[in-house]
Length: 280
Image 1 (cartoon, rainbow, N blue to C red):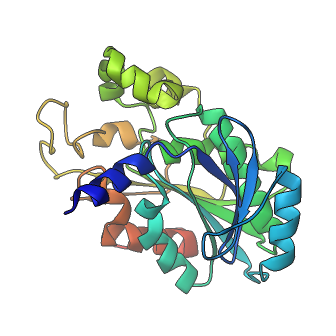
Image 2 (image 1 turned 90 degrees about the horizontal axis):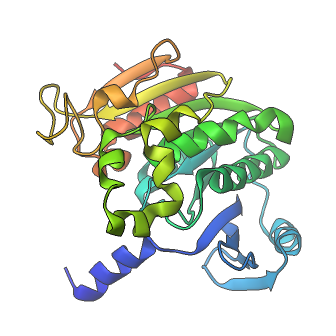
């Protein structure tokens, strides 16, 4: 593995752009610091730098309509990028979904900012013909998905099903511990609170067509012996659960980061979003 590849993978975590609109390979992004927007064509080239609405108007005029009745918004975790959800996105697209696999400035802005952007992307799918919009969120992305779907009634789109993947539904105790260290607070200060038990408790659980949970673990003591109970190395299985609000749960033998692309997670996304139940 080359040094340039490692640097490229690492710097993606600090990306300053958040995706607001996606269709047929076209993207509209906003810069988290300046608020400037740009429209990107399917080859990643900048087609326009202008206010958000102007960028969306250009992209909408050039992107072919998806023509899909189901839409899905995918959200990666803290410090990652949209490539983490590529396997799920490809499977859903092949099965007939219009997919918005969003990248966002996870280390630069708080949860409410990301939820508003994700809701806007969901509304764009609805405007393109999706009767309802499902969400798949990994880790922090699951908490953002919850908050975004809770906005749906006020923002005019129909929430579908929600799959939470390794998401600290009740907060991650390890985040509370890491928050004591200045270096960690400096890197992830904007989103740190959201993944603590107190922060997660403030994130609404949306009224939608169903919620399922995929957790990583070993089925025994977990990957990290310093965490209590089964775990994926970062989040415990217990921390992923929403007692009394789940329509399905499955445990996958995987560490936290690879969990988002695990074949079992892909199958879970297809099964639950299509049929409302997890594969056996």
